[in-house]
Image (cartoon, rainbow, N blue to C red; front, top):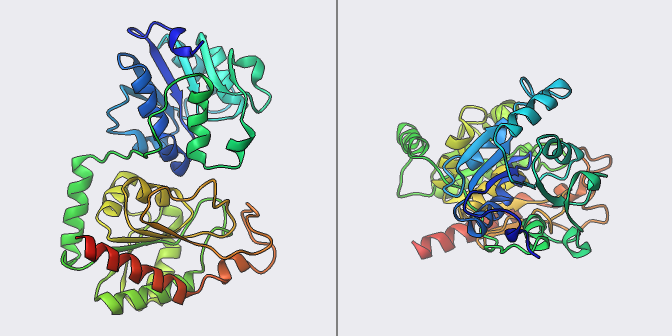
Length: 354
């Protein structure tokens, strides 16, 4: 029997525990859309860490966003009990756990949520009364399908693999005025690079090569290049901007995440490492060149058809390590020439379609 029959669909209160990283959060958006499809009259809340909330803002399939304030009110320890109490006040009927951690199961149990749905992983099976056995094939596939598998395992309907990212008008206005202020020519391509990546340097193409690529793109298309990233990437952005001979504008750490999404939406081309912003560009259907080295290219590939993965087979990849302990060959074998040719091809296709 599918879980759709286990709660009153006309009055259901559903909590979806979000993934903790921007890219993963974006890859769960097909699940949110599908939950609304299964429970059209339900009140649906997503519980998310502060830094991923912009992914869910403006999402029409959600009724509420609840902040998991893990640095203050909900800090580990007594904060976990406070969060469970906060959740209990909502009287949720069903918890759908995108996050696989033991803590996610514990919270939904302590919150007294009657139906607790998630993968039977991380020794939390006794906390879930609706346990989904992980299909071994999903372990080897894309994370989008992995997340959708939670619903399929519960005999709930899915709604396809399309990613959702809904932008607000103030962020779009910011992007428009920013590009105008920086004197971007809207008859020329807007190009962005994202040289950082969360979790160490192994996922990153070399900053010197990004700088050389920017110089070539700026010369070829007579444009300035936007350097994206978070606050932790600002120094990296400044270094690339300096090396590239002033053809770049470093906005790493100078925008909100929502504003960064809106600027990516304006891009004709986005060049990026495996990162949250890569998945944002995929959700916004932006042409992109994704440079993949240490990460699992099957699990985290950008999902839009106008993305090109640049990856060279080496024996040690994917190693999934934060820092390369040898010669970083997986990235070293991706040359500036290779990326430049891909960029020209993507921009040529864009011009032909426009």
